[in-house]
Image 1: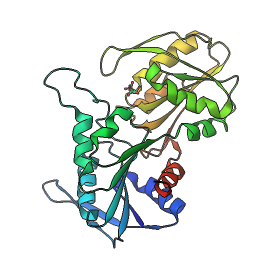
Image 2: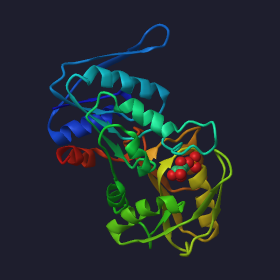
Image 3: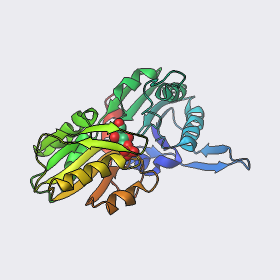
Length: 282
Ligand code: R5P
């Protein structure tokens, strides 16, 4: 078995290869003069694990090309972060079901798929090969245990993230609750209060994705008004678009941490061991 990755998942792929104690395959990425992607892999084996997050359109094309290169051997695909997953329904007539379109495109040529905290598990059946999702909630909990949290409360920004928050909170036996989020636009949300008091507590808002940071910034502002001592945030996928990291830190959030499903300077939690374990136990 060998591990290979797209440009976006080089660090995570290296960690997975080390955890599996298998070789990492070198890939040279470049572009044709018109901007089209090109790649050339090193020597492949009869079983390849591709690690390829899809944070943007270029990464999607690179991943499709890489799958095509590896498809002659047994080829297992890990998609740590899959863009377009939030369009997981046809919300209005005439719209694509984008999650289904991407899942179908990435199924061709692979034997199975593993995702990490995909936005909604209802997407998995759209892959035309066996697909499963694994969660790194426990790894986030273990990271939080290294912080000096005072009477911590783990908070999901909406009830959709509550199960994930429960998985994080279980590590420390911490309190867990959720807010009520109403999305007003792509960048604006409205937050309503939760049941447990935030007063004089360390609050950690956890979510699968931080994109514009609007959800977390709005929640943090409300929690400080309610007397929270400090607010942290941790997520799996740090999309962090349009200056979200700086916006969150400027809003008084003590720290923003994410995993290496999208490789960022604030990726302080790794999904590698969890991925390696899943690959060894199909
Ligand atoms: C939505 O349901 C997701 O779980 C996240 O809450 C959302 O993607 C965060 O987006 P933003 O950071 O732009 O508020």
